[in-house]
Image 1 (cartoon, rainbow, N blue to C red):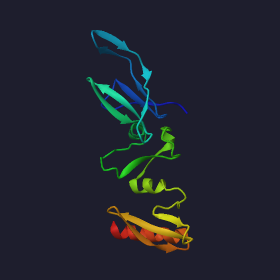
Image 2: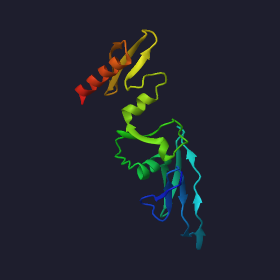
Image 3: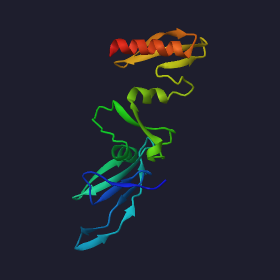
Image 4: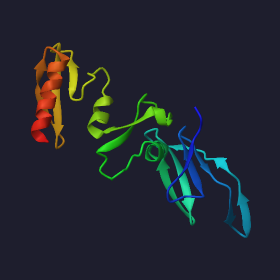
Length: 169
């Protein structure tokens, strides 16, 4: 895959992000005890406590941290963060170090939360109950989990979830 670079908005002429999940600084003159020339280079990444990679970008002597997966999503998936986190950037393979555009997708926070449950259904709000040997359906509303029932099939449990979701939307 060919690496494509795009300017980081607000940092034009300073930094670019690529579809392969890399961030580079651009060559420029920087004032510091006189002038010196900064060469183009790929930035080193840091990882937060959750394992997400980020870089620190500087402009006018002010630094700001940016998660790489979000930068890639903004400039290559047209992600528009609104502060509500209703839509989040998901790593398809669950590898937080793989920030290539083909490994990222925009999904709802609800889908993202249900994705993290291991051994559960392919459907949001549905999981297998080992104790009951049935499919369990539940939904989270205002931080309160509501049990919707036990079902013989995964699809029946999914339909119960979808019906409840339609009632609250």
